[in-house]
Image (tube, rainbow, N blue to C red):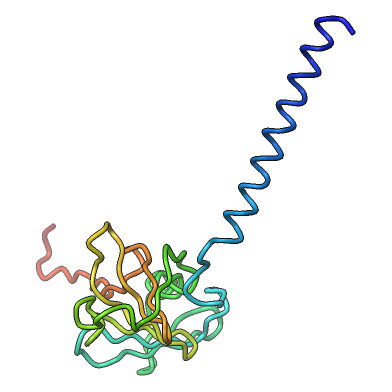
Length: 164
């Protein structure tokens, strides 16, 4: 075998080994991934209840591809879509609720409670390790990105004067 052919063969074997290692690592990471908060597709959710702090809960229902408040008024579809996106929020870590003092992580009482098709998510305090928050799901606590923490809906601005 000529030297050039041996070099090409060695290079091909090296590339094949690297591809095999990359595939193994990808499968390993996928298997060990903590998953999402709920096994729900956000697009299929039709009922949302949100309670922020000690304020009364607000109830929403999806009908004909639009969100409606229980008082019959149209709700902001984009706002509700951000709330339902929490169902698919990627979890950074799962722990048992017994591993924490609920008051210390903001879950007694929770900062926000979001129910998606009857499944309760209680949002607690921001974690000390970064822009993440604690979320109680049943008997487990997840750490998720702070972007999934429910916020109050943006109020429409009403112009009081005729000038801008």
